[in-house]
Image (cartoon, rainbow, N blue to C red; front, side):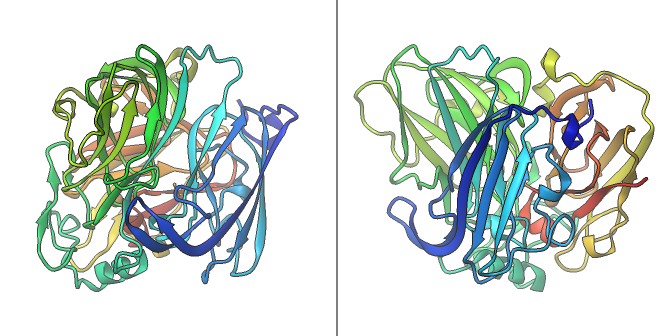
Length: 461
Ligand code: C2O
Ligand code: CU
């Protein structure tokens, strides 16, 4: 299975879109903020079918350079949107055409790969449909989660600057202490989770579903007994979410775009950059869809309505949040997503670390500016052994590839492109090096990435 351009599936069709990144005022549901966006928050929801060409013309009206990265898509390297690596940054006033084929169906999203622009309103979704899929649902809902600070007195760049300067006394996770953070308005807030350990570095005033705060949530309408496919995307920068729907169980069918064996639980944990597709059989009434900021205080809310009834209160916390919470450990690949076992040609170790001094996150003791790329050759089966030596979780993402997370028996398991590595835990990933280029491999906590926790999966010949 070659993922080189000639080897990709081509449908002969194309989907075109225009995106303009610009400063502007956005209403988050009663909270009006000045931010940077693609016009709305979230940005457009793009849809294509597998094998289509996606042609997106980006125009930059921001006062800063930008790019678009197509998160999770095994696309051609020169369209991956990493400035200084796969393309020149798109400077203010300039335009760039992204033109690539989408080789795999699934739920994906896009965002800039410049600084902490992801923590503004610069994100949108890309759903790649599979025309041969059986379907079996009545609704297809895209649900995007976010943690929000921009325009509330601080920009993400200011948050990053104060983290780097140490004036917000964060980075305790980096010191291996975990949990205690003071990055809000001077008062400390303990951010820790039994599932994740240190839960983040930034205290956010708002959590959003599809760009709305809980005081004016988005509503999804259906009829009792119908089935809804929920394509859940965590576009947050520093927050994992625990997601549940009052009165419902969730059946997880896809992780990061790829089919899993269906598994049912009460709630699901989604780290930054992760996506899950869920099937819901709709009950009769009005139900809260809640994304609770894991280990932090606050939640995002949407409403599912199949009958008349009061809108759930902004603070509704369904009991399902404390039921069976699905994590990566519960997932196994569907037959179609199975990575066949094979001899491993090359192994790289990635020690995820933090600094005792200042806000500095590392891979093998190095920040990105001093990175030692992870060298691979085309055609190899590559194993990445990640070990987290900090008390903070890291959602680790590899560009341009979908890896198999080794299961408890050491066999290639669920396919993903982003995986949460919990404090003091190890995760082993296998991938086939079939997509030549230079591919970022990094923590999808936007602040950790900017503070150094990034490297490159680098094809050599
Ligand atoms: Cu969505 Cu390099 O990231
Ligand atoms: Cu991290």
